[in-house]
Image (cartoon, rainbow, N blue to C red):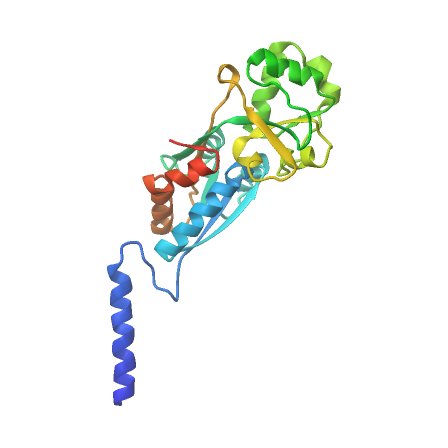
Length: 258
């Protein structure tokens, strides 16, 4: 071996030693790729946090955010993912069905429901339960998601005894389609969805969260699939997502840390 080859060999050995010395780091030529499927509600917060995680860890992450119902169906059907991030009850169902590993659930954030109208619309009072009920009764059209918030609102309207009065005015948002986008287009007058899904949309005004007496907080959790081949990488990711370092991003995205 000539002098040049010795120098190159020594440099490669030094770089390998440096990578090995950094906790959580992986070799640059063969980083593990973590595949995630999540609900739309966590799309923004995960995008920002995963960008940070990739820079710090050297791992690669591919994330697909879709309607929560569709995400659960795809996991149940056997599509290959390493991590699933959905409402906690959906994760529990995937654990019961054997798709997500028992004991792997990690609660990440809490998210509340907010109310929005189209930009330029008249202000609507949503400061109390009675005010929200009156706003719903007065709206020509309204919409909510097919996720946990939509299930809750359906029950709320039934409890109020107004389902029959408003059923013909409800515009169902297709899975994965933000309710806010329907509001911005003028297709819906009053919309309800997770605050995190309304924050970054143009053409709407967020009136506020549901009043405390009728607010429903959804816990979004991560679960590790039983067939993941990247357990170390997944563990590093979930530790980061649940760490204090992720708190400010969660708050900025309209969510509360657990």
